[in-house]
Length: 369
Image (cartoon, rainbow, N blue to C red; front, side, top):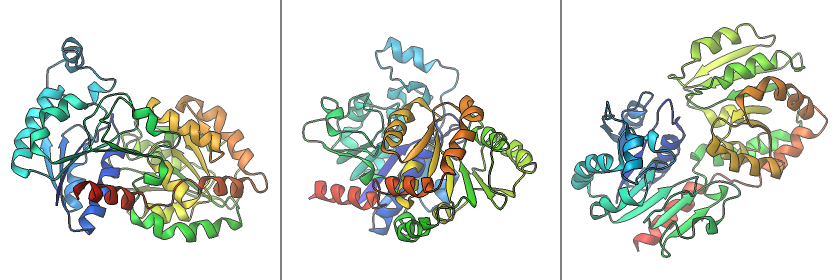
């Protein structure tokens, strides 16, 4: 079987779409499936990272000197995230057709908020099946399978947006997590018994365009962390504020390390007593490991799932980066109360077991039969 992924990463988009597609691609490769990627060469793209993982990745040049959003509005083709594409849907489809015509995949997997059924229909002759990965439920598709891994999402949210024959997979039980999260789940959950705040982990995604990491470090200076506490910060190599964060880290009252492009994130999370982290796909990694979390929303599309996690008692929530200085100290104080960390861990762990990729691949196999 052959699978092609169409997804992007950039300083604007972040890295989450590519990372969850890579998780699925690696799980498929373990089953003997041949996987390829098509990505536009935005600033902050991850094409080299994908290739270093052993996958063939084709780059699409950004189309320059064109006002894509205005053009798509005039053509009736505008979507809420059209500016993420740096091309019109028709331009992107034409470039993808040249590649898909040679690859002829059994499955095309699309994880992109700027693409909808018009793009999919124009390429339909080049693939057998279509899987769409989405979080928004704001546009139509002609897919065989749709995955929305967010807590609080219901199949009914996609009624009228996908064909009646489409199988919709919703909820964090389908979250695409790397296998080490399921492997370390029991170890992490068992370690929550002491529930002492000795190790704080800060992770705001690979890009952190808003420098939420720097804001968190500055706000922590006003917090009453235990004397023996240590802080770890995880960032991507292309994060624009990496140098600034390292400078702030060197001034912290507690031992603070800045780690770049880590390859053992599950182990890092397992060893953390509390995470201050971005909303988005990593939410389900933290739930799988039962790590208590103060969550920061970095994009509007993250709010529904973040609020659902807040309602479940699985996180404390900061909805705006500019609210970090005011909201982080009382959140830290609340979680310093006896039993608070353990209670949050026990609520979070119920929503994700780390086996989502296996469930998705099974549904793909069922469709192939």
